[in-house]
Image 1 (cartoon, rainbow, N blue to C red):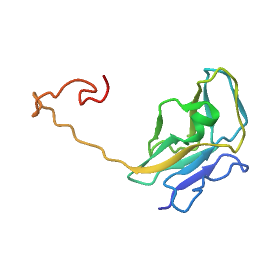
Image 2 (image 1 turned 180 degrees about the vertical axis):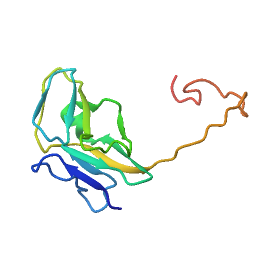
Image 3 (image 1 turned 60 degrees about the horizontal axis):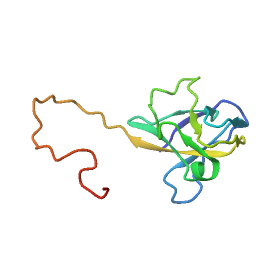
Image 4 (image 1 turned 120 degrees about the vertical axis):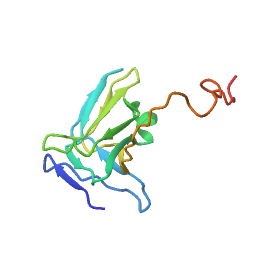
Length: 145
């Protein structure tokens, strides 16, 4: 699949798959940053990415982001719609420093991963009553007492 991508500056690297069987490509910071304790911070990638027709870009944390850096992606994941691909629609990695210390991020440091997933829009069919009986509340299948 070919994907259109624009670098907002010459010194930004294109995303890469780092193994032959990687499902996702890595996204890196395009700036050096210092994120204060408990701070939310929009880290620019320096990239505009146009998802192929019928797909959206999902952005997730790399597995080391929380454990090694003390950062988490604020929404858990990011959803980048195909129509967010204009000349100024830069991809950002929005993080929160959950530690009590400053966290330094270096330009070029890989923080997130992206994967293209198919869009499945639905048509809603409004009903008056669900066909199934209620089975119980949140966590009702057990395992936690």
